[in-house]
Each structure stands twice: as C-alpha cells, then as structure tokens.
Length: 458
Image 1 (cartoon, helix red, strand yellow):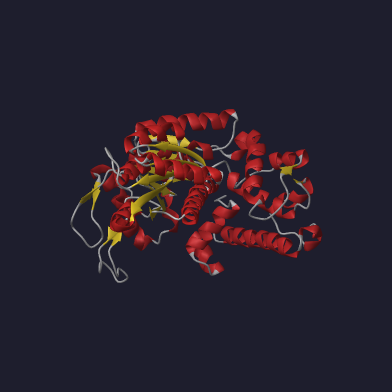
Image 2 (cartoon, rainbow, N blue to C red; image 1 turned 60 degrees about the vertical axis):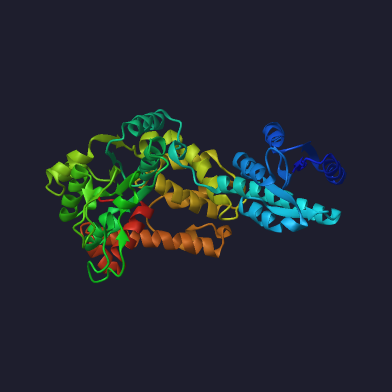
C-alpha cells in the first residue's frame, strides 16, 4: 500500500502549514489549497485519498467543496474542519458525504486518529471493490470460452444478434451453454443495464406457468396470499430468457403467443392490461421444428420465437477447446475444494478429448470437479479420471484410496444416483413425471439432476 495522499483546503495559511507539518511528519503525502475552487482543480491531478476542508471559506464553502469532490472521487474520504459553535454544520457535512469532522482548535492526536481511520477506510473500500470484481462470475462474451474456429464464430453471431433487438431462439443439447449465450446477447445489447430474468419452463408446475410469466393479484387463487410481479413485468426494459421452451404446456403457449404479438398482458386475477418493452430469448435442447411437426408445439408460436436463431455446438464438435475449459474449471474449483492442484497432464487431456460428452460442457465441468477431488498431486492425472471409462457405478476397489473416504463416497454416490435415474427414465420411456413419482422426488429435482448428469432423451 502506497502513501496516503491528503489534500488540505483552508483559507488560513497558518492552518495549512500546521496540518502539513503534522501529517507529513507521520508519512502522509500532502498538498494544500487556499479555497474550494483551487482544491477541485488540484484534485484532478493530485488524486487525493483524503480531503481535509475548512467549513468557512471564500468563493466556495467546505460543504460544497466536499459534495463536488465526492462527485469526482466517490471512493475517497472527506473530513470537515469546523469551529466549536458550528457542530450542526459539521453534521450537515456528514450527511452530504463527509467521513468525519474535527473542531478547531484540534488536538494533534485526535487529528491523526481521524486521518488514519479515514485512510484505512479508503484503502479497505478499494480492496473490497477489487475482491468483488475478482469474485464476480464472468458475464457476456467473456463467459463463452474457447478459441477454436467454432466458438469464435458463435461469439461473432452473438454480437450480431445483440444489435438486432429481436426475439432469438437458441437451440443446442443440454450443457452446451445456452443460458450463457443468452446472457451474452443481453450483455452486448442496448438493454444491458436492465434486468435479465430467467424462467425455467421445465421446472414450473403447469398450473403456475401463467402466474410465473405474468404475476397475480392477491386472492387470485387459493395460495395467492399477496400480489406477485411476474417475469415479464420484472424484466420490463430488459430481457426474459425462457429456458426449455419446448416443455411449455399448450395453454401457456397460447398465453405466451399473445404477449409476443400484443406486448401486453394482465396479471392473473386482474383485467387491467400491462404493457411492457421486453426482449424474449428462448432456448430448447430439443428440435423445435420437430416438435411443431409432431403437434407438440404451436407453429405460430415457433415462428414468433424463431425470428433469429443461434445454434450452440456440442462439445464433440469443438473438442480442441477442452484444454481451455479444463484450465478454467481447475482454477475455479481448486480454491473451493482447497486443493493444491493447478494443472492437468497431457494424458488426462487426451482422455477428456476421447470421451463422448453427452452432457457437453456441464458434464465436463462435473468430471473435472471429480478429477480435482481425486487428484493428490499438483496435476490431475489420467488415473484421476477413471470414472470416465463408463457411466455405471464401480466397486470401491476401483477407486484411488488416496482420494480419501469422503471424496470416494461422494463420487460413488453420484455415479449410483446417475445410473438409477437413467435406468428409471429408460423404464418409463423417458416420462419425467412418472420417473419423478417412482423415484419419490419432485419433477424439478429430477430435471435438475438430469441437467447435472447430462441425461437427455435417447
């Protein structure tokens, strides 16, 4: 941490000299100004961390100086100097953004205590801001990794789609990054400052779809204990992302078609129309045109959604990007799992590239998490990826004992769970409702597990 820079503003030269001597003697870097206007000019080049300003000054008083200074430097701290009889003005200064105040004549120790606190506040605020940026997940195009030709073309398409501000249909297998693509379209569009609202169409009970989309009034139905704002109203001005649009029941499809046509809707239990300006991005892991041909999806709704189209490629079509994904996921999870592993061997990369990724990038992410848990050195080895050999559970004898009991049990449990779900899905002809009932879990839980393990209709 470098020296804290302090700008002293007072129309009395004696006060400026005293403050400079005290603060410079304690290692602070100082500059002085005779009034607020001079201070603001000086601040542009000096960029102080802390401003100390007298309350009463010609041309511009201390409060106005602090307000203008904070507008330019919001992460800095300001301290007001005031006489004993002007405490009320000091309180007003704090309301206007001052960090603290000192009364004249000031005590040297008190001065240093207040300045040190202000300095620590500024530096801690800066560190907090830096950590927040580091911890924020990547958004927009930066989240779509891969430098191969296919992913470069996907990013180029997204830039064009973002400019158009029309409805987009994203198609792609489970785990290919459809939601990331939708977020990137939003982040690159003119709506980027507004809300991005996600609606998981496959996870909403049929009787609550309309309420989820459009909201409801209090008392509209049995469990409507209060008014609720729906996704379209919440996203007004921004983007609604309708994930797994192919799972919408017929009645909800008709309601959705109306809002796409009319740009207005009514909450459940109300006849009052509400107009919204929303961009719709829909996604499906199924062949949308095929659903229309089979009579499972409205053709008129499909054509409304299919104004612009984006296909997210399966991982097998751009396996050259697997090393980049591996590096990203190792970096992402090594801190979470408290592992010293930082790399992956060439043999392990070859094993990853040779695998048939039915669950695509999501399945790859899960596999690298398990590989990271199994790894005992600074690299993930091919032996740490033994679970890729087949999708069925293995005996505990096949696992590396050095992974530890908890990690081994977790991996065996996940493989067993995946196989049980897959067996039941096959037994019911991939009927999700019947599968969920037989496994005694909710339909939403089943869907989330299918997404986790990359299971899709065979």
